[in-house]
Image 1 (tube, rainbow, N blue to C red):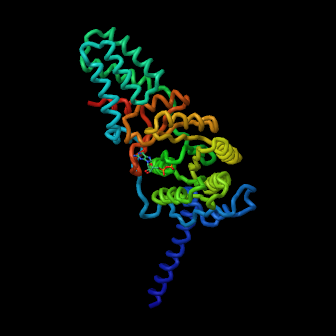
Image 2 (cartoon, protein in one colour):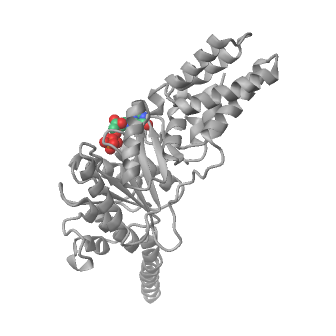
Length: 380
Ligand code: GDP
């Protein structure tokens, strides 16, 4: 009997020790992985923590940590453009195959060159790049003489790649050695901005990062709800403010909570009301200035709807005047034959396309890879 009691006492002591050890070990890890502890998160509502902090920013404490069961596992981001290349079908049939067909004609007379020009312009490549490309193709065709279909495909591939650009840095700056990297996402409402922030959070989570979202579009409660839903699916909490509240205050709080919680990246969704350019400038300028109190913004991504053509380019110009855009996200490339916009917008802003949206699915956002893009366009 005494032996049994002793065994029970030893077993109970072992369980207690085990629980204590597990708590000690898991505590800091949970914090480092980015699931801000409830008490920390509530600091968002603490006026003492900064004059810009809004007392009403919701704490992200009811959200699950990344390890929680039921979270989705997003697809890895590498190679996505190759996997999604069939989504470029409309640009492929018009721009890619259209050009291949014309360049393969036995005689390339002026009328055919005009048709080639027409194809490029219709695909939104833009006037100057179209003229340059046609000039280069004319020279190469002359030098080639007789052309096999392979010659034509190789030539077109090289020339399109040159136009899209292979020597620019398209990497996303989403990490920083000693603080969270801050990514500001801007663009006109309806371009797919909030969806893009949600998809980008998934790309980062898939790549092993911890992500905090900031709903700095405080004008539409639906936008914040939408963002939060995206985040919840992959364990990325959302910092949000009262409807109609100060967007800069939410952005400030999100970055501070990101630092306190040890997150790798803070993604900030902003409002994009273009009706009033001065208002937009004030608002976005303020968001950026306020966030920069914590440190520089690492990436400013401009979201553009690829189907909007010249109108999209005009929007891009306005945003580029307001903030230093560091990368472009072209959404809805799946729904258009106007893939040439990739070239036009890079020329217009002198900023690379870094991501492309190829559908409404959660993992339909791909890092932009010029070779995979051009190959998809001219694939047989
Ligand atoms: P926001 O107002 O700019 O934040 O736009 P939303 O993120 O709410 O998106 C507007 C609509 O565009 C939604 O129906 C999205 O599903 C859709 N959308 C966003 N990106 C893409 C894309 O790459 N392809 C397609 N087909 N639809 C997209």
